[in-house]
Length: 91
Image (cartoon, rainbow, N blue to C red; front, side, top):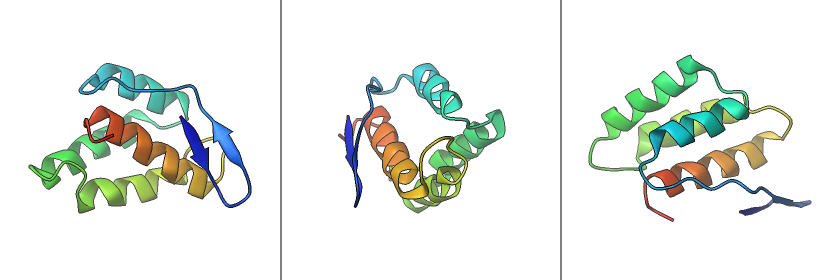
């Protein structure tokens, strides 16, 4: 996956198999997210219901992006969005 930012392209060799929750959580923990963050993601998904990438998940992404280690907020937000869309089968 390549994430383009205003100043650089970051090539991340991470992809998530659709519906592979265990792998998604491993990858997210690798970027510094905690078990509490993952719990909040699950709660956001449940609150959004049928709307896979709804407002609650989008808000979770914005909040979690500030916690991702070693990359800036905008890049982290793009990264989390891409990973979640892969997991949800949307991309």
